[in-house]
Amino acid sequence: MGFVDYEVKDKIAIITINRPKALNALNSEVLDDLNAVLDGVDLEAVRCLILTGAGDKSFVAGADIGEMSTLTKAEGEAFGKKGNDIFRRLETFPIPVIAAINGFALGGGCEISMSCDFRICSENAMFGQPEVGLGITPGFGGTQRLARLIGAGMAKQLIYTARNIKADEALRIGLVNQVVALEELLPTAEKLASTIAKNAPIAVRACKKAINDGLEVDMDKAIEIEEKLFGSCFESEDQREGMANFLRKKDDPAKVKVVDFKNK
Ligand code: CAA
Image (spheres, rainbow, N blue to C red):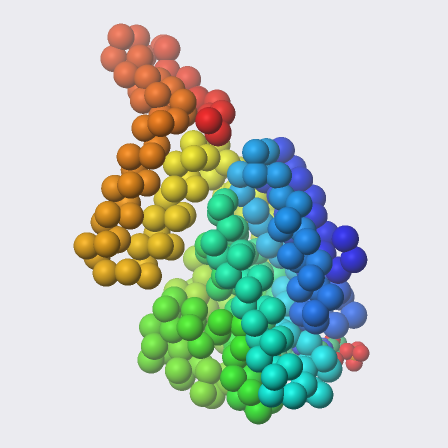
């Protein structure tokens, strides 16, 4: 695929935004390619995605400033919708998506990382929403997701000042879960993804949906969402096998094995 590479490794897949000449900035073509890659994910086989950028300098340096520079009001709105639709698709994608941030994550780059389930980054990563310095607001969900992730006060400070922050500060404010050396970034992301992929896939998907959907409603409704998804797991073979495996150890501890969950 033109600007987006896709590689499957056992039960995990790596999506790489690959437009190094522009530090992986997101123009319409990159966004279309990303959407097409998501269309092609085999949800029977793949259990966790990793999103990263090509090279060792930049994850995604934002939306493409050249493309945006001549937009009209209506075109600006449409470009925002295009990015938002794809980022929302990523956020609600049935399986977990880990952002492995290998450098600049500015503007649309910070925003796409926030559409992933969680973020790990390399020591050279840099985050920020520099849009007000360009005369615009964040346009791919930054005003909403940053405030939800790190709190309104800290998000407002970062967005209004357009200040970039380094990996250690991103860790301190809870924007990323872990900082590792650049060469350890993909191995760490793959190890995390493999750990997730070993667990019962139907249950993992249900957890993602419960957390995402639950955060959008009040606690009474959120608990109902969890109850339904919890109940739905009892229709799966993986629940029967997972629990049977636990109970077998009561008879004979030697019988306990690592369950090979079937996604059924
Ligand atoms: N859009 C288009 N091109 C970009 C780009 C972007 N967001 N970011 C970098 N590039 C291009 C540069 O124009 C340059 O291209 P040329 O070689 O053809 O001149 C190439 O990538 C390399 O960039 P630099 O020479 O600038 O590299 P640097 O190491 O000196 O600086 C940087 C790196 C600090 C990331 C700097 O490139 C930069 O500030 N980029 C813009 C970051 C930004 O403002 N992002 C937010 C965009 S607005 C947005 O995302 C809106 C939204 O929410 C939807």
